[in-house]
Image (cartoon, rainbow, N blue to C red; front, side, top):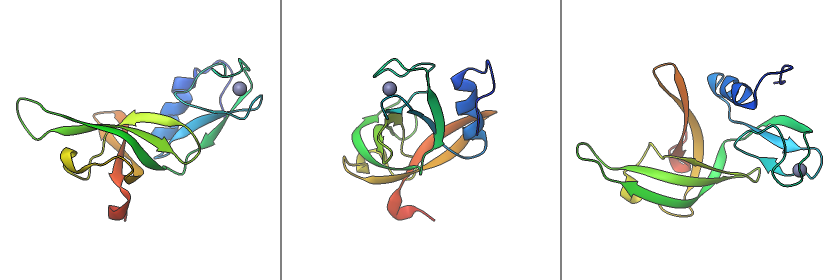
Length: 127
Ligand SMILES: [Zn+2]
């Protein structure tokens, strides 16, 4: 998927999600995986960023159960994707207390209204 002239990176990112994919950028200058999408590489400052699609497979780096007044707690996680970037998300397939550091997870795109939301499910429950 290509970035059209003048299109902000967040727009390209959203189009990836709308087609069920997690997009990230790779810096042609230093090779870094860049996420959240940007105009220039945060490592070396290059503006030569190309889009790639993540496998969606990752490992939970950190997890927190967030308790709310009503309903079950939900998990906020940091996931290290196998392409080498880290993102904040949540795990939807298991009780928050059961999400452990090191758990293998896979991306799933949910929708809240018109908004595509990247979440994760535990890999063992992958279908
Ligand atoms: Zn770079």
